[in-house]
Image (cartoon, rainbow, N blue to C red; front, side, top):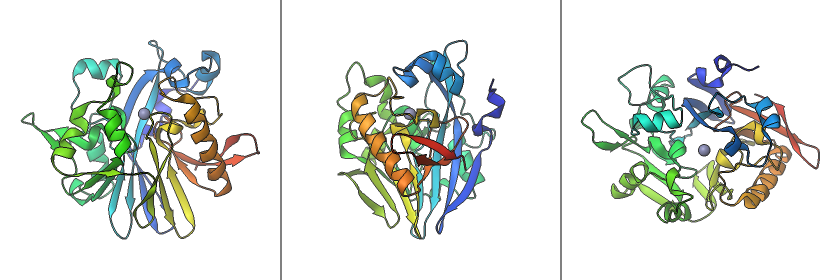
Length: 300
Ligand SMILES: [Zn+2]
């Protein structure tokens, strides 16, 4: 039985290198989501062996972000959940992301300081998509109740299609999109809308991995022949490595299937370090592929 005391989220910052880049995995807290919804068509007797559920059938999920030191910029990939939600919301989703030091509004900003930087140093933010557990820390509520940009010197990046999708939400998708996480960024003129795959700065590029939402993107970091991929919700945990293990939350699960099939093939062939957003136990690792399926080769 795995206990929550063994969670990877207990370590605020982990640092390694990708070529000449230093990358810091920032543990910005936990969210707890329904285990059945997280594993879609997979029966509970299978998934609960991988991630045990609590009395409300919820499983603990990390909200891991990545801070990347490149020669050109300090880049932040994803921003966690932030500090703007009320008690009822925090209870429903089992959110645990309060900082241990009250000078910081949330654990993301505390982790950036622990990695040796200030929020003012971040010049590029990449949102893989705009769901509240991935883009909530784009903004924060200050002591006077005002909503402010968390990274005042940064340009934020998301796919144009995701921006439009977030503003065309329907009864199935609207609970995930909270406008105070992204509209203030646009109003401040700080949001750059991307049109498909491409490089943001040398060594940092995005590529579309649709399915969870139609314009979801993953982030690739490349330096001196080494590559890391911040996977995000195309494969939310390492338990989702088997191809049919796809979230019930996904709006296009068969599109996720193909995105994940292609991603895992390349990740094995090109030896990408995969960085997981939500895995509560394994922040990153390499995969091997036997021609049919991928498995975790090395939890780095
Ligand atoms: Zn997510």
